[in-house]
Image 1 (cartoon, helix red, strand yellow):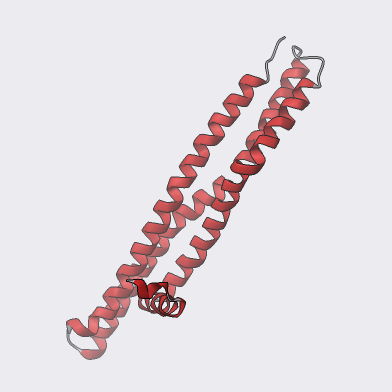
Image 2 (cartoon, rainbow, N blue to C red; image 1 turned 45 degrees about the vertical axis):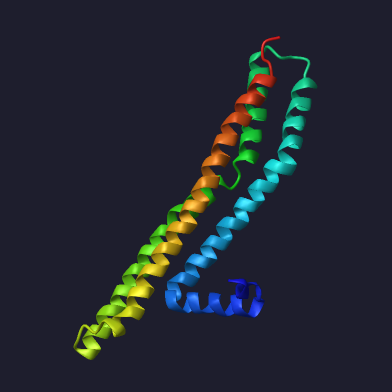
Length: 178
């Protein structure tokens, strides 16, 4: 178990895993990397920048002398809309990538099964040893696509809930009609 702490052993194991999963596994890896880069950006936004966005919105509202006219209501809605836009910047793209990863896993399943049928056609038999590589190529991308999708789904749902709460809280703080 401790041998995986050796970088060379870990690299070799990862290379074997990717080779066993076929070319679709590399596509899943690239999509997952992009998705996680955006998730990390959103985590940094919520941890570092969101407080500044809220503070700027509150300052902009407090700087107005008029809080009760139709124009003030439109300015308030603009401020809330801009804050919501910043808070949910990459949520749609993350959600799309969450939806794409299981589809790529399904593509891996199909290509793996085509590999199995190709082995059966070439050899003329259903030798289990010969088909094992195709079965592996079919199951690993499916697993990887589902794991990537579930990991992203947990975060995107949390981000969307945070956006709703943050916008509602900011809307309560920007009192109208006083």
